[in-house]
Image 1 (cartoon, one colour):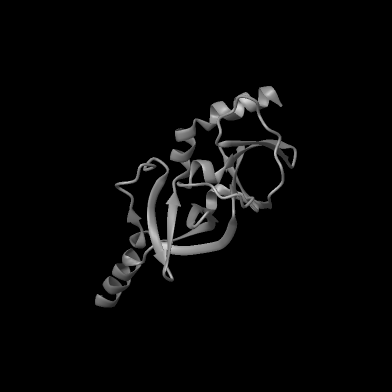
Image 2: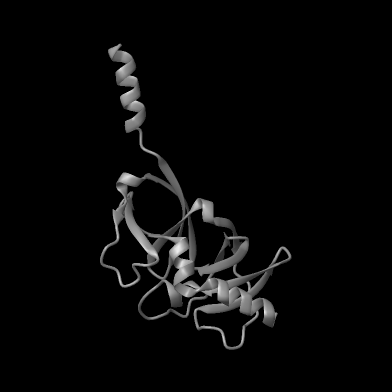
Length: 165
């Protein structure tokens, strides 16, 4: 009977491992849940949207769908922006709408348990940062996509872009 109790206890103590897509913007490393990322594409120039916020780089046609592309440096990264061009676009699928974030480098997939996440309590951008995690001596800033969208009111931006495209 004690073996059965020990097995049940081990199963409940087993931690859920999460997978995130990591990327670099400027000198910081960030990650988004793998469930939010549709694909990673090489950077291509976007069509500018007149009157759009400066965080909106433009729009792209991705496989027949219009995607709003955000400049990761302007919205996520802080400090002075480098002249180095972005090299990738992380394409996200949000409530059947596409958006992309321009990033400098793709790091790959990182895996960790929720117990390793340090919650973010003091950030100015607290609404989009859900925490941080250290993996192999590298700090990753974890982004909360749902709050990210609410912060920039993406649905309005996407609707406006569909009218202008």
